[in-house]
Structure formats: structure tokens, C-alpha cells
Image (cartoon, rainbow, N blue to C red; front, side, top):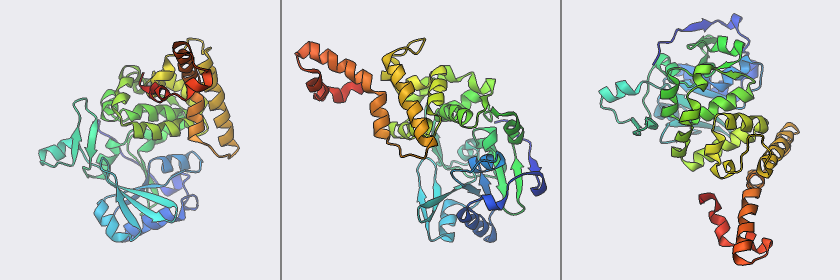
Length: 334
């Protein structure tokens, strides 16, 4: 992992105000700090506040372990196996607290069993704790390695994230291929952040994506489903889909649809994708409700219709009857 250079931006030098941070997040930050622990607002919350946007979530990092956090908060539950996290519950509002993470190499030398990898280099378990410097090295993108310190209201920048925010660049920390192999979902996140924040992906960060896209096949389907909702239902679904295709990532998420892709985006399937995603983007802009089932049903309509027509020819059934035959349920596995 590369050596990072700390830059501390004092309260007078940045635009973050506590008025823009959720009251519940502030409660957690202050209680951790009062109990003698380090407490930082981290990641997307800091990034969005610096960009003048309203964060969707306020995540916190601390040197307290999950068990120590639970002892401080009665309204806390511990979640996750791959990443052990503390969720502080305020009704429907959930403040996520993560312990600062350390290096796997040090854990291995100490014979800890808190982290493990697959043969491809993907992290299977990751509960190695460390310092804020180590945690910053473990973050994915420079713009997400920014820490708002509740003790003095400064912003700690470990990876040049402030400069990348100003220049509109999405850049991975460390060697891109290694970081993608650790967690292939980072490729999806690079595209999502680039579109969401109207930024460009750094050339070195983008270069390995096409030939590593196939690693997504090793990610559990439940996690890919959640990621696909973030990608396609956040208000920039059509643009995100186009960029995912450019890097060969959409084809890994929806291999059945990729069978109908053309160079000029002219197939019925591609026209439906553009239509349903642009419609979804419009509904998000108008604060209307979304139904993931409808989104995926519309996206998959033409492949289903093609299979139904094949069944009509093979079995002499009507199109409507063919749609409801059990073989349709195994369409995705063809």
C-alpha cells in the first residue's frame, strides 16, 4: 500500500458546518469523544458536505471496537460478518459506526484470524483493526478518505481527496488491480461515483476494469442486487447503464441482456433499457415511488418474449400460455 501524506484542513479553511450534520450523528460523535475515543465523520458524508450536497448517510469511524461501541449505546446492534459494524438506532434513522481498520499483513504476522482472502485475492473476512492512518490507506477512493474530526472540527485528508474533489476526479488509493481483486464491487462504485458526482475516472483507475469485470461473477447475488439498485435507481440510471456497458460491467450484472446488445444500441432490448431507465430517472427527480420489480420486469421483457415465441413454435402454444410455462422461470440460467 502506498504511503499517504496527511493534510489537516482547519475549521476556518473548509465549508463543513455542524448545522448540516444530522443531530443523531452528532450525538454519536460527541458521546464517543466524551468517552475518550477518537470519533470522525467519514466517507461520503464528508465528501458530499464539502461539495455542498446533502448527504444520504452519515457514517462514523472510531478507534473503539464494536463491542466497546455497544457498551456505550443501549440502542446499538452489531451487524455483519465480512465487516463487523455497529448500528446505532434512532427510530428509523441508523448511524453506522465502523472501527478504524488496519493492515492484513500485520494481522497475519500476529496469527489473527480476523481476515481471510480467496485465491483470487478477494477479501472474505475483514475485521482487522488499526490506526486512522491505516484506515485511510484501506479506503477505496481518495474522495472517500476524508475525516471530519469532532474534537477540533478539522478535516483530515490522507490521500489528496480535497484536490481530487476540486478537479472532479475519481481515483483509487493504492494499486488499482490489487484493490479491485480485494473487492470487485469497487469497479461498480467507481462508475456510480463518477456519474453521481459528475466526475471522471482517473486513467490508471479505469484501465484494469474491462479485463477484471468478470470477477463480479464471484460476488454473492444478494450483494449484486443491492448494488444494482444503487446504480439504477439513484436518479442517473440511464447514464450509469451506458458507462457500465462501456467498461463491460453491465454485461456481468445482466448476462442475459448482453446477448441482445448491438454497437448502435438499436435492439428492442436496448431501446427498452433506455426507456425504462430514463423513466425511472424522471420519477426520482419528481420524488415519486419506485418499484424494483417493475424495473427488472421491464428490463427483461424482450428476452422473456423471445423465449416465449420459441416455446410457441416448439409446442404449438399461444404466446400468452407460453409466458406462464415453468421453463420461463429458468430463463436466467440459459
